[in-house]
Amino acid sequence: MQMKLLMDRIRRDGRVEGENILKVDSFLNHQIDVELLDEIGREFRRQFRDRTVSKILTIESSGIAIACIAARYFSCPVVFAKKTKSLNLSGDVYTASVESFTHKTVNDIIVSKKFLQADDHILIIDDFLANGKAILGLSDLVRQSGAELVGAGVVIEKGFQDGGKRIREMGIDLHSLAIVDAMDQETGIRFREEAPGEEML
Ligand code: G4P
Image (cartoon, rainbow, N blue to C red; front, side, top):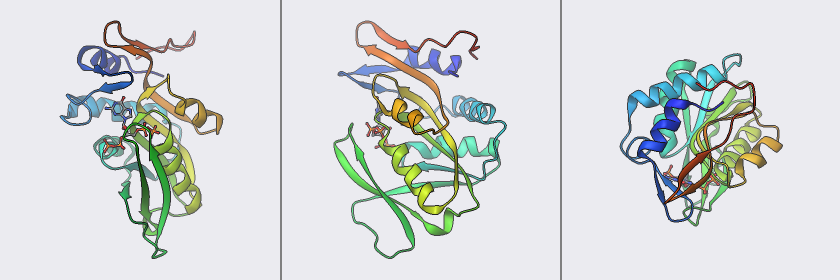
């Protein structure tokens, strides 16, 4: 379910750059509006309210602040995957390869085996979902650890890219707080219509 407070803020302060980049750096991923983040954290807890979450997993860098505030509501620690250019072969880490369509880079991501364990219940949190590569990489780390993947919470899903579809098709319980279906420098941002019967916050 989408979050009206967040959508209003994106409408007001989001900027469309080029064909498909949404700049939200005045409140989400450069300058941070901590009160908005607090509402976002509360909303993630509400959307996953019936679920046991023992750890939140995110990826550096922009996911960390969001995950930390959400973790206050879940009363659990945050683990963030680190991006690295050189694969750590020591055997004490889980690794996955994440290709960034937006940045045209490939990173190996790593998490120490100490921090993901088979009895964990993991919620993945990130700022953007575009092609889904970051969430797929993170879910692969969870799979390697044997932990349960509870689901994924995303602040902004770009619904015109196929990550959300792929992740839902994999059976991952994905909750996006704002889903942008189209955006244009002239005509602005169009959010996904909620299905009938779904109330909006
Ligand atoms: P994917 O993970 O869903 O496949 O997405 P993609 O590779 O396209 O995105 C990679 C990076 O680009 C991510 O940041 C993501 O947050 C960011 N990103 C994607 N689309 C947008 C957008 O429209 N606006 C903004 N502002 N960012 C976008 P990252 O590589 O993890 O870097 P960091 O910023 O978290 O350090």
